[in-house]
Length: 75
Image (tube, rainbow, N blue to C red; front, side, top):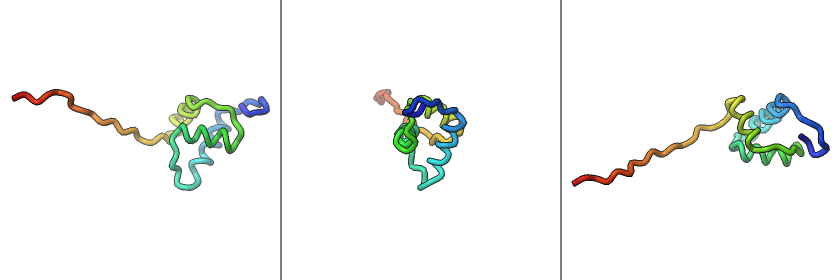
């Protein structure tokens, strides 16, 4: 939704996201993309919706999961 109250379709939001990631090397996660959509396009949008759209566009980066071994060494 824009600040004037107009609803924006998911397809339009996907187009905005594509424009944002097309420029300047794309150093963004979904939270930074949310901030960019709010500032650049004047949208009122939730980060969870941006996350869902990023998943649909397959533009999310890989997450780093560290697997720790908490077992004590036996003597």
